[in-house]
Image 1 (cartoon, rainbow, N blue to C red):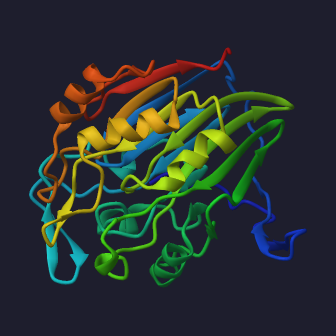
Image 2 (tube, rainbow, N blue to C red; image 1 turned 90 degrees about the vertical axis):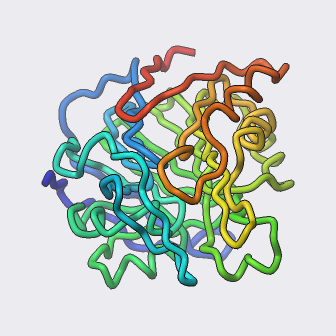
Length: 300
């Protein structure tokens, strides 16, 4: 298992408006990073490995093998249908984990057992509290629109929590975990390199329209699809809904993830592709299967 030195300055600082925000996470400097290219490695479900500006970020770590089951709460279990593309031991050294929420298909028992517990995790307040008893004490909670800065030398990463709602069903809101979307902004010095949006497990809702107003010119969006269905209610976007989300957020390129890994999914990749093909919004759609990589350049 790979490890990473503990970051410094991970306490909380007072916000000028009176609230609390996470202090800068300062990482040890290393070799001069490649700031011209980056990549997204799709491991499976919502688990991706993102590399850009010298940072290596893991999202929603779930490494259970095909045939295993996760408990989603309230007596509901989901069976994993597709193996992840790799295991924790295969990962490079990690700088950060970005976790949309604490559900077992996004942070499973394998991740809890095998991940280095000192890695900083940017997530919801609820997830920070759930992870602490498991030994993951380096949690950095964010409310919607709050940001966490990660610094290594001249390179900087800003992780901002985006609005997300796990369900549109009022009766189920208290049964599902709070969830964040995420925006990752990469910088070197004063130069903004790349902006990457991750929807998280959200449904369509009105606050999505605020995202392109506050944070325009998104380079790449990763959209959780799959149509997860609990109690006969859809609690993650279907393929057509995920395309509509992309049309609202307006990234230059959109990639669907979280579409076929668990038995509770009811909307496959073909649903997304059909809706994307019918869309008139100028977005380039790219499709990954487990283990594939999307490589990008940061030149504007």
